[in-house]
Length: 295
Ligand code: PAF
Image (cartoon, rainbow, N blue to C red; front, side, top):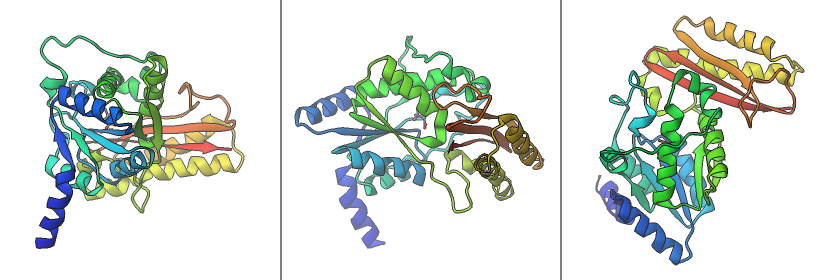
């Protein structure tokens, strides 16, 4: 126990929690003046190994790592899980200290969206596909908060997870279209040993539902092998995936799609590289997962 507290007090001293936008901007400017590069990982907290893998990637690419912890209210729909979204800042702070993160930007909602807030960033078309069809306004919330965070943290590079494939495509497009001087790095999905993609929302699953949730990755792997065996017809592959997932009565499919990696449009034939993406509700959890399959 004593060792734990010793370790905790040494590491925690080096990780500073910043709650004010002006202070975070001042820190970023000072770091840049000193010639340091900033690597940034935006999160909504309740961190797991997937987030920590993004932090490790950010560390490889930069001198100083900043992580934001902010459950962004404007990316949740009125019927969604904003109020019950899991939060544990103490634990997040300890994990980030152990990873050697220099700054945690941890603002309050009223700091990010003060009374009278009016500006939103929208990446058209891409935001309406896949998850966008089921979560209207979600990606406007994501691009708005990420644009704000980029202006506050002023990173040289920012790391996003492949698990949120559509989010990564949309952020890259926003960065290109709005000329943000930020390099976007997309890091691989981290999975449990049995294949379940790590997600903060996995806490909503009961142990039985968690077992059922394995069908998502199984369906993706089946699609991958069908493609590797020479199948080129997306409709046939999707049919097999629907059959597999629908064989689990607890699983309710929002969508399963095989799309182009750049424009997220469904493909009519499988060539070179495709994104197979799905969203499935199991109990209280809405789970997303995907695989990029290259020929
Ligand atoms: O991926 C997430 O956790 C969120 O969408 C992000 C990028 C932190 C924006 O709130």
